[in-house]
Length: 119
Picture 1 (cartoon, rainbow, N blue to C red):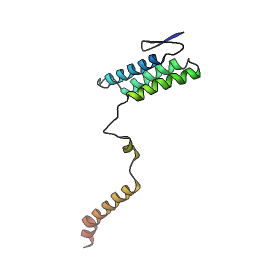
Picture 2 (cartoon, rainbow, N blue to C red):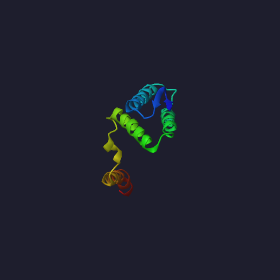
Picture 3 (cartoon, rainbow, N blue to C red):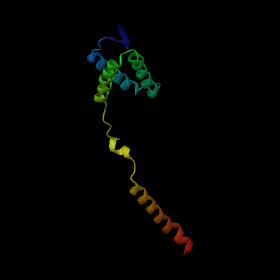
Picture 4 (tube, rainbow, N blue to C red):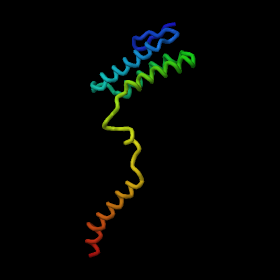
């Protein structure tokens, strides 16, 4: 049994080198698509994942698990760290920061508006 995804022929049993090559090809396609304004990246990535899903749907559960472990593992390995958006920045603001900002705004309003109206 041979199946094809984006020009890669997969035979059973699955060869991890073929899966890794597919993941590298998909990453290369994504890098190239970033610079094309006519391509919507969300649709592009969904189309890639849909083709992979359509293929893995035909596999046995253990084969499917092995395929996704190799494919996702390679994509994670190839992922670039984003220096402008580090992981710790996704945590949001602390409650202390919110109250501090509100206190500063209240002080500014007091001295700029309320004191002028009262005095």
